[in-house]
Amino acid sequence: MNKVSVCSIRQRKGKKKVTMLTCYDYSFAKILDSSGIDILLVGDSMSNVVLGLKETRKVAISEMVNHTLAVGRAVKNALVVADMPYLSYQTNPEKSLYYAKKFISSGAEAVKIEWFGGDKFLDNAAGGCPYVVKKLIKNKVPVMGHIGLTPQTVHLLGGYRVQGKDKKEAAKLIQQAKLLQDLGVFSIVLECIPCELAEYITKNLTIPTIGIGAGKFCDGQVLVVYDCLGLYPDVTPKFVKRYCDLSKIIDSAAKGFISDVQKIKFPDTSHSYHFNDNQWDEFKADL
Ligand code: KIV
Image (cartoon, rainbow, N blue to C red; front, side):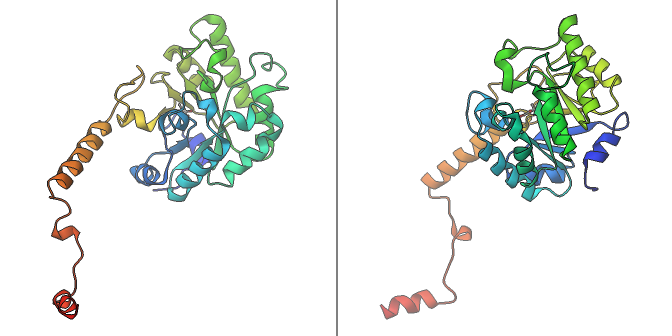
């Protein structure tokens, strides 16, 4: 398998779909990397699915850095992308380059930035998301954009709801996508937007779009890995496809362990260590 790079992802436009899954630790990274996935995203969805926090905004920069280090150590082929958490660029855009480089020096090969700052930065690209993206790219940090439903600023979007469903909102998303492309991002995540709009954006960009809840016309697809493995069976958004029921498998394994221990079936002799030859008998005789 060839190492996936920012350049090879860009070249996939219109040729072969790009696959991306989130990943938060060493063990999953090893398995997913050898499965042939293109991109592993150390997503800030880690806040919800790993840390049990209610909002992605709450994850600490140090936590994201530590998990990026773990994923980076395992990966041989996939492109590792780190999600810049809220605190690393939305509260202080001036420090965004420092934190982006922190992620790059921790094993990420690119960072992902959610659109922020509202519409006022669409025209002059003077502040908000365009300002940060420009600054990182100027300093040779590859950036993946993210528009549509952007969970870090969900309170400004009217909650977890599909974005771009009317003409005005759709026009803004098209403008954001084009501006991000002009600023030099190598791909853009489109989250929870109508599939017709995602198709239009995809056809009108020269860089790949990676959809989540954005239909089949995107150049690639991303899912939160715990969703597609069925680790949270009670929460299944419409756009998720579950490929196995890992929570059931884990539950059954844990119950098997509990039962074996209670019935003294585990550990058996094959799981136990023994003295060589008749050393134990000799040892007891010497006591
Ligand atoms: O953090 C995350 O999981 C993401 C994906 C939904 C794209 O940003």
